[in-house]
Amino acid sequence: MRRLLSFFLATVFAITALAEDKPKPIHALMVCGGCCHDYENQKKILSEGISKRANVEWTIVCEGTDREHRVSIYEKPDWAKGYDVVLHNECFGFVKDDAFVEQIAKPHFEGLPAVVVHCSTHSYRQASTDEWRKLIGQSSFSHETKRDLDVKPINAGHPIMKGFPVVWHDAGDELYKNEKLWPNFVPLAQAYGQDTKKDHVCIWANTYGKGKVFGTTLGHSNETMSSDVYLDLVTRGLLWATGHLNDDGTPAKGYGPGGK
Image (cartoon, rainbow, N blue to C red; front, side, top):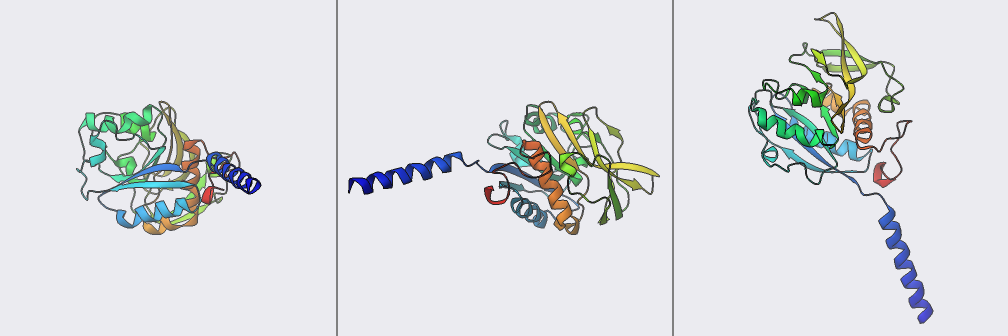
């Protein structure tokens, strides 16, 4: 009986130790909403698609249908507490309150990783503060007409770009115009602008204060977001921003799908 009890206790301790050694999932906050996009479906596409590729659990705040909406969670001084990364997929370009915008940017400057996609680049563009634009890594105020884009890597050796096609034909998307690239902005891929007759960076990495930021202006349609190329890319970007991406573009141990 004593041997059986000792064996049982040893097994329990071993299982407990293994559980304690297993990395905890990345706790990600997704903020989405605003005008012009199908955020109700995009929140599912992004959260489910990324979690199939990486060890990520989500809290999702999706609200507001106009460009002047102030997302409720941002009203809290400690709005980012408890999260390992924030994925911004929002379209609130007419919010002008500088203090409100700076409160959004502050946790990222202090070190909270960020992933910014599509219309997030144009959010808060009517505010006079530059803090959101510095967080994004670029200033952009307009985009070209929706059309097919040929996206080409310009830094294929970066871990985020591992496995990305030599040319990705992104059907029915929008090319955002780069008005200004801030100092810590690292271009990763670009597409040609038919209106401006020049290339515009549409995938990048950035550092804002102590925070690492992955960004892409791509992702207007559900079709783009649902593609394996896009979901693979954004997953690598999130893992890179949180420090869980290997140099070969694979998830660090414990941060692949299912905690592998």
